[in-house]
Amino acid sequence: MPYIVPKFIERETKLVGPLTLKQFFFFVAAGVVVFILYFSFGKKNLFLFLILTAAAVGFSFLLAFGNVGGRPFPVFLKNFLLFSAAQKFFTFKRKVFAPKLFPEEIPKLKETKVSYPLGASKSSLQKLSTKMETKSK
Image 1 (cartoon, helix red, strand yellow):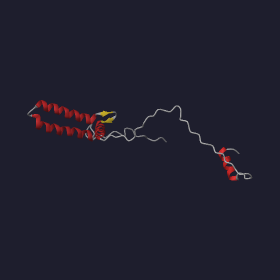
Image 2 (cartoon, one colour):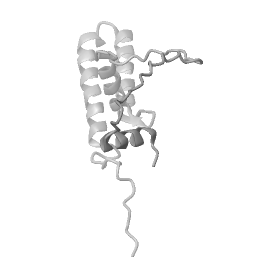
Image 3 (tube, helix red, strand yellow):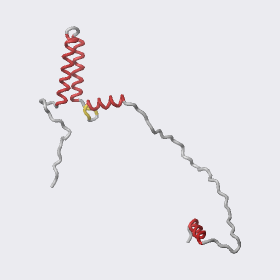
Image 4 (cartoon, helix red, strand yellow):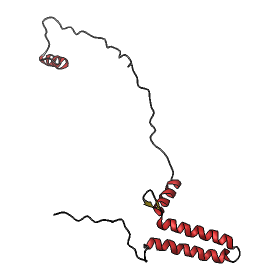
């Protein structure tokens, strides 16, 4: 029996007409900014008011509908600001060395010969040690 796989699980529900709740709040915030701008600049300087209103509405459209690299613009903006403000430090820096083609010669150890007194032979432990070192049977 095949399982039913849900589709569009990352889609947000539309609560206010064709807008999600986040998108609606972005436009409400832009409306509040335009309202404040109107009473600050609207009657004195109409041209500045129109430019600032266009910037506020454009930024709200960007926040509501913009995507950068497949992610919503508010997520991109948050990640950008956190990355820009965070301290950047690196703990590991690898040093690159040129490979040695000819290894240094290993100094040879002096060989000492063990002499046994006459009539004395190696003990069985010494014979076993010799066999293990030389890997013989």
